[in-house]
Image 1 (tube, rainbow, N blue to C red):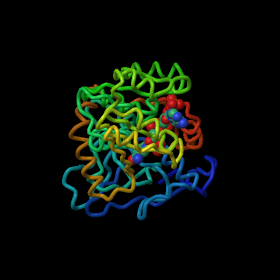
Image 2: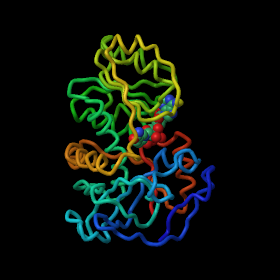
Image 3: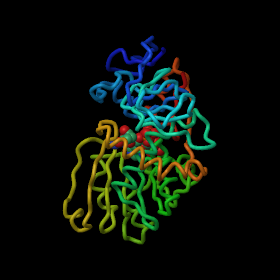
Length: 325
Ligand SMILES: NC(=O)c1ccc[n+]([C@@H]2O[C@H](COP(=O)([O-])OP(=O)(O)OC[C@H]3O[C@@H](n4cnc5c(N)ncnc54)[C@H](OP(=O)(O)O)[C@@H]3O)[C@@H](O)[C@H]2O)c1
C-alpha cells in the first residue's frame, strides 16, 4: 500500500510516498481502507523530530482517519466488512490502510460525507475529554476557547454552544473572528489587537469564565488564570506559546482555580476506549443532527502532503486540513 512517510527529522520536504506492506488484523483489531486522514499539529511536530510516536505505533504520521472496514479480527463483534467508520490512531493514518483496536473505531455519523468525517476523531475526543469531562463545562457556564479558528477550536465553539454554554473565543484577524461568530461564539477576541483577559471579564460582567480550553501554554499561563471565575478550570492541551510560563499563584488561590494538562495520543488503550465511547455517546448525536459540523479548510491528495503540512504550519487554515489517498 502507499503511505506518506517521514525520511528524517526536518521540514515538510522530508515527507514522501513509500510503498509498505498491508497491515494485518489482530484478534481485537479492525483493518480500514482509508478515505481521508486528518492533518494535526502533532504530525508537524513528529515530522520536525519533536514528538516521536509511542512504542508500537507506526512511525509514519496520522492520528485520525475515515474509511471503510476491510477486515476484522476474530474477536471483533461490533464492526462488519463495509461499515463506514472513523478511527482515532496512535499514528499511521497517512496510508491507504490502517489497523486499529476496535475500541478506537466509531461509526460515521448519519448523513455525513465519508471524507469530511476524517475531521472528527481527534477534535471530537479532545473537546469532549478536555472541555466537558476534565473541564466540567455545564449549561449556562462560560468557556474561553483559544484558537477558535483551528481544528479543535471550530469544534469546541459548536460543542460548547450545543451544550448550552456561552463562549468567548480568540482568533487572529477580523475575517477569522467573523467566521468564529458564525459558528456560534458569543464573543470573539481578535488577539492581534484585543486583550483576551479584558474581553473575557467584560463578557462575564467581571466574573470571569468557568473553563479555559488552552492551546497557548506557557506564554498565556498568567493571563489564562486571570480570566478564570471563582472555581474556574484551566485545561491546557497545547504549548503554541511555549512550555514555560510564569504564574502569580495568589491569582489561582484567590479564584480557587484548577490547572490541568492532558495528552490524548499517549494514553493507555483502556483510557482511550473510555474517551471514544463517551464521545460517541455524548457528541455523535450532535454531529448526526447537524448541530455540530466539521469545518474543512482543504482536501489535499497524498502526493501533495508537503503542501498540506505547509498550509497548517502557515496558520492560514480555518478548520481542518484533510489528506486523501
Ligand atoms: N493535548 C491533546 O490531547 C491535544 C489533542 C489535539 C490537539 N492538541 C493541540 O491543540 C492545539 C490546537 O490544535 P488544532 O488542531 O486546532 O490546530 P490548528 O488547526 O493549527 O489551530 C490552532 C489555532 O491556534 C491559533 N494560534 C496559533 N498560534 C497562536 C498564538 N500564538 N496566539 C493565539 N492563537 C494562536 C491559530 O488561529 P488564529 O491565527 O486565528 O489565532 C490556529 O488556527 C495544537 O497545539 C495541538 O497540538 C492537543
